[in-house]
Length: 269
Image (cartoon, rainbow, N blue to C red; front, side, top):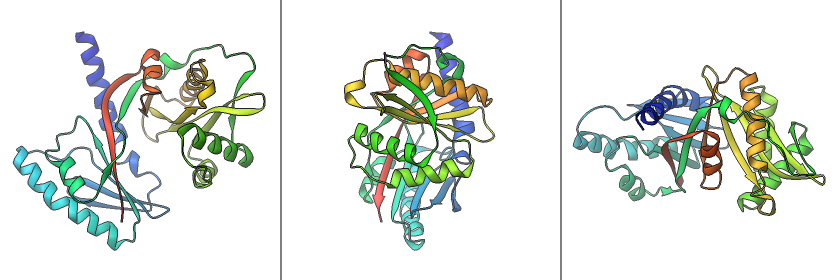
């Protein structure tokens, strides 16, 4: 048990040190500081609030700062013409009163997810696939659009070309993002991205989902193993993922550790 606690503490420290603020600002078109807060703007009139921590002080002092900061953040983004704003929180942060403050100012919390972190080598296995299922990395426009339509269906979202357009831009930018798919009978049934984080030991596992009829057959785990192999080839020794309750157990069985939780709070301005 002591070793597990130490392992979790080390992975959480790596997550805090390498995956917050600067790494989250990659691709931002504008960046402003408000105390410890990083106010980021991204294409598509999107805003994002993050931070390494909220600083020191008593709970009362932190709460007073947040009472000041939340309306100033909203005013800043409204002046900038931002339409959609996300404030990303983590479960291990000390942020007294933040939840109630965000709700009071019109933010709505999305589903809480588990932050999973672990060594890529633990997931880089050679796994058998069901008969007729194959894996490949894709980058052609038609394949990317087909994968995004399948993911919208898997997540239960309306099919939209917006996700595909954004992903095509990322793949064309040369930032190292990879899109992997699993296919059966010529149709895509599972997909997920690998996103190496610059100047870090990490690569992220993002957007992974499987169509309901194909779940429970080891396809997602095999797709994750393929991405782990690719991460190691890129020199990334650690993987991270914000996981739903569908993917968390798979990553836990593979050796990733739930180091904290994350909840995005969203608002339309």
